[in-house]
Length: 543
Image (tube, rainbow, N blue to C red; front, side, top):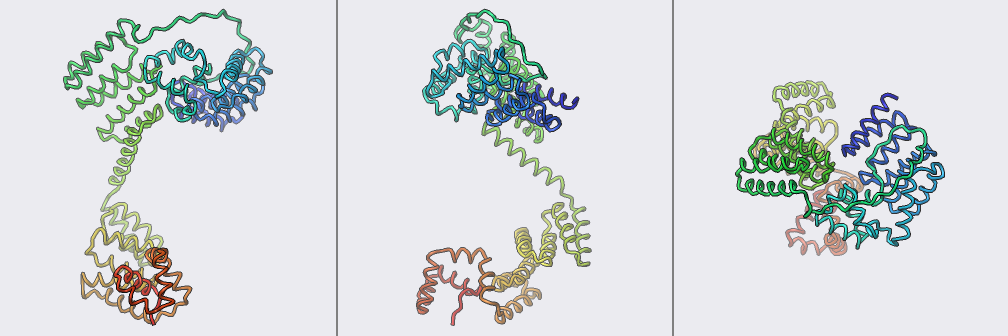
């Protein structure tokens, strides 16, 4: 139980800090240890709801109710998820069911009242169509600051007039915050182990909300701070970094609750190459932003800048860590692309760090010993390790191709031979090994072409001369059944392409009915090449 409580506490902290993936992970680990802990399911439901994964939030809410049918919070979680899923009638039933078990639960009463109000007020089930919409947003500190942004008001009006856009806009953290305010439920709160139903709270007199100041009514210190920030931005654009820092420091003194002054200051140190100081300021900015319920997008920007600072220092693992933190807060394509780029560079660094020609030589010698002893699978493993240690050594690919040929893995042998030829087009062994693999596959015409290329490099190459002679004899004496010929031919991608071409199929049908048509078609060099290919593989014969 101690371990379960520890995981629950870690999950609660992560949920409060907005680290939703971590919160879900800790709650899930706790559930594995204690699968009948209703509080863990309730808290995970809250985390899923905050992530926008409402179906999962609903499933956990159902499980909470199933495990603790007399606990009001479980019904609250389930009903809230149903509201987000636009299942308002089901949400209403859930609130009513919860009140049967806890008649005095104020949260359930408020939830029922709100869902009934929405059901009667809106046919479209659109929470943004409430008559007192802006009054609710103005009186809640979570959305009060957002109303100062004209783009936010445009977003509200868009959702008010076009409810169908809600599904598309759910990824915007502002929409999630607004829905939480309008629905009257805080999904970020974690539960403790309350086993007893909570007593009904004493009635409190209603307090009239005072209208909050709009942007033009900001306190003088905040107005002055914003002016200082603008002066700092002008200096920054001119690369007058000392002046910019002075203005940002002055803005910070006037309004210590605004994280953007620290964030802008970090940009100066980033430009100056002082990445350690840049990161320090970004961390402070995140802390101030969390304390003052700053927009998730601003938190994401601070984390992304930390990631960029590590990227500049070629510390890609640390960069990926902070890019992922940024993406957790707010998913931006540019940050995602940068994160993927850093991950590729990490893999490349690991690959390069693994290269060691001395160890490659040792592995090659071990592979040679196993090959001589006839232990081809083990030889192949040693050659593979040698290639990882020295990927530019063509002989390693050639040796592994020989292993694959012995193991009848001809396609893999061909792939290694082609890599040999790519790395060193003058490496004769690459051609002779490729010819041997094709010969083993009974593709004698292609094998002869490859052997011929080897002879162009060295006219006295015995392997190539012997290979050509074997292929000519085999081609002349082959006595395959029509089924074997067709099966082997259709395994060739080039033949597959020819046979899937409707024009070629029409030509072949015409040749079958009228053999004299062959001479006409052979005048077209493209068609002639395809016909000769089919003759080479044995699919058609000229008598």
